[in-house]
Image (cartoon, rainbow, N blue to C red; front, side, top):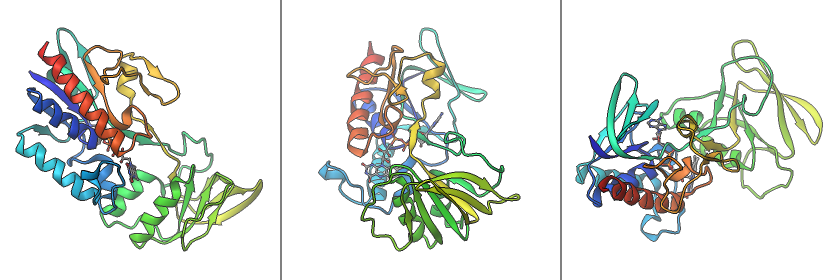
Length: 299
Ligand SMILES: Cc1cc2nc3c(=O)[nH]c(=O)nc-3n(C[C@H](O)[C@H](O)[C@H](O)COP(=O)(O)OP(=O)(O)OC[C@H]3O[C@@H](n4cnc5c(N)ncnc54)[C@H](O)[C@@H]3O)c2cc1C
């Protein structure tokens, strides 16, 4: 039996685990992938823009520092563990497939999931070559070529950064199709089409062309890959399953000042609470949640 189990080993989960441990708890981190770091792994070479002075350096260096602290504190980590279910009796039983662990308190730090073509309701052929932003960035971080002629669907200017990162990896990008009408000075060597909406995806097996409505006028563009950079929503399915109170505006769980959800003993922090939670927000929430979970487990 652990005092605190942290679900998710991204920035918030790691910081919450450290805080819980430093407040006297026996802590376990359950991470579904084989690596700690979450979204930070996607832009480890970038400079982490944050107001917290101690972290104003490369994201990869920030992450390495935190992971070193996790190891030096002796915090246990289980990799390849996707938390699928939670049952509550006296304490919590957390299921990862056929296995389970027990905990007095839980901190959920499961981050976000990308919006997909289905979330955006884009009709057309079911073809390969359509990636969400995170999938595309994960593949290029592993030095894989996602396509030879990539189009980027962008909402809220999210695709501009994606384009920059893909170009840095030597990927050929034909253009960014940004939904917002207002033009920005983005310093990109590829075209940005403003007021653009991808309305159809066509191809036989692989994407061959997309139909885009630009300023209300429909045009076809040839491409072999479409990256959807339309923002993220909290990865908060477990809270729905637990019938926790949810906030419609963020689609994340409602939390109190100590980051406890409406389910007593279950805390949340970082982008699972609000997809717009940046670095500083994630750090602050994680510290609060980690300490509150440790206090709860002691009771
Ligand atoms: C492309 C991009 C650029 C960004 N740039 C900046 C920036 O410049 N400045 C800034 O302040 N912020 C930036 N952010 C936001 C910043 O990355 C986040 O605030 C922070 O990384 C969120 O961390 P997190 O731990 O909440 O979530 P994540 O990093 O998403 O971590 C969630 C973790 O939970 C794991 N997980 C999910 N579900 C389960 C499950 N069921 N069981 C077990 N494990 C699970 C995932 O594998 C992952 O490791 C950026 C985000 C992105 C995507």
